[in-house]
Amino acid sequence: MKKFNDLVAESAKNVTEIFPWDLEERLTKNPSLLLLDIREPYEFDAMHIKNSLNVPRGVLETACEWDYEETVANLVNSRDKEVIVACRSGNRSIFACEVMQKLGYNNIVSLKTGLRGWSDYEQALYNKNDEEVDEDTAIDFFTTNLRKDQIAPK
Image (cartoon, rainbow, N blue to C red; front, top):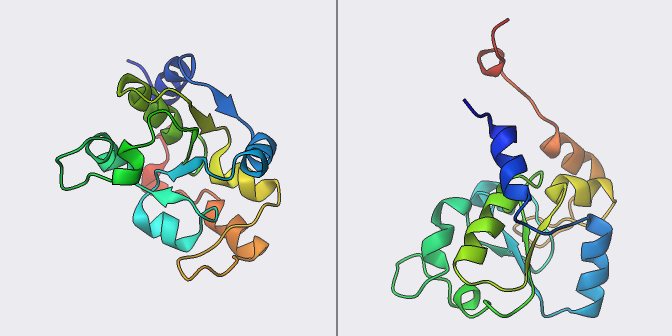
């Protein structure tokens, strides 16, 4: 049986990843690139990179195509545009990039370390009201908090 990390590692072989400092440089060089945040809406509302587009991973495939209730025109029209995909830690974005490549996206990369890494790199994050989130709030948000029932038995 494979585990989650095995699946991530397998998919990562098919995906280009960049680090937060690479994203910072790309945003400067190409301000029209599409920054796609695939986290859940509550995560995006709490904090995100300015000017990113939120399309949750659960509806991504239909958001990338015409004629669905989830269709996002800007996303459908970005197959030949530079697209950077971000999530919390860089795992979900690997899966998203892999499937988007199959859907014809030609210039797509995953943000390695995700928004957690972006925050660790001391880059700004904004809430749903477009207010900058303070560093301590970001650290608390990205800290893993497992309940007892989520920890593997010994």
